[in-house]
Image (cartoon, one colour):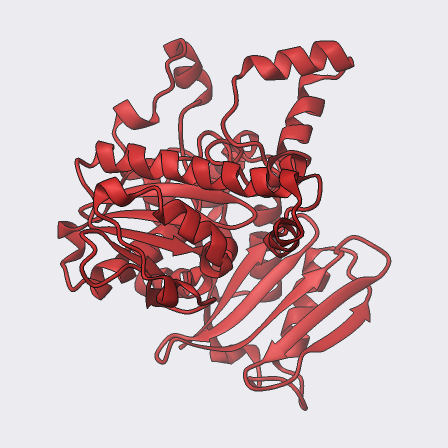
Length: 396
């Protein structure tokens, strides 16, 4: 069965068509600038060259029409018609407390996702638009919602409740939710396979390090703690996000700069993190190059990022009373050799021993700790699209 995986943003639509039997990606693409006068549709069939087209994309329905046109194109398409698609799996950012697992989408599910809009105002409305467009363009095909937050619903209250008046939790469901759950689930399961242990018998710390980053403690197959909170702003330093800060900073900046709270939150989301520390970029290729040229701010930015990761890894080793596996994943985690070495060099107290030769690699599944390392450390490329396809297949 072919499964179409959709990751819908406010002005973009990423897609992959996956053969669920072979788990092979048959083709993938991205519709950009939805809602603008000139949209862009990118599509790369497996084994083929990338195709890039400019065309009007006034809304998400037109983007879905463009996706179907590319998938079924007589010359460059990968299927004859949409009857070859058995289901559509949608990435949904926030499921609140409603969803602890993936679900087949119906009207009630859509209402509950909409009820979580206030918890993810930039993402959930776009996800819903994508779902509704899919249901309109491909009637009769089942749609499945796979939630970024669902994996973390196994956390205990001691881990997810904030120490604020309980009425705010009761009224507004303000608590720690965590994100990147699909990736944390996929990578932690693969880590258990690599050390040849049952998933429910291994303690893993997954470091999903990209432009957005989160750390997760997975104990015996369950998320027991994670660094992101009510929103993806909390946790480690990220590309443009501040990560953890003293909440009073928001008030101080707002007063001193005559800004609204929303203005400051926007700064913390889009103009902070490694970008602010380095004064250069959120791209670690730029930062690594600047460090090689002696740039002190770039060096501090890298050190701050590594320090934040080390702090969470140490905390989660304590939370689980030990750790068997540490896994690096996502764009930075899979490719940043210098950052991984900086982190591992601070974990010797856990029994981590680095294999520098193995660590000198990018975008490849590999053990980067030595054979005699007490804690095994891996680079495990994440595949959220495949994880969504698996969840979708299981449900339908």
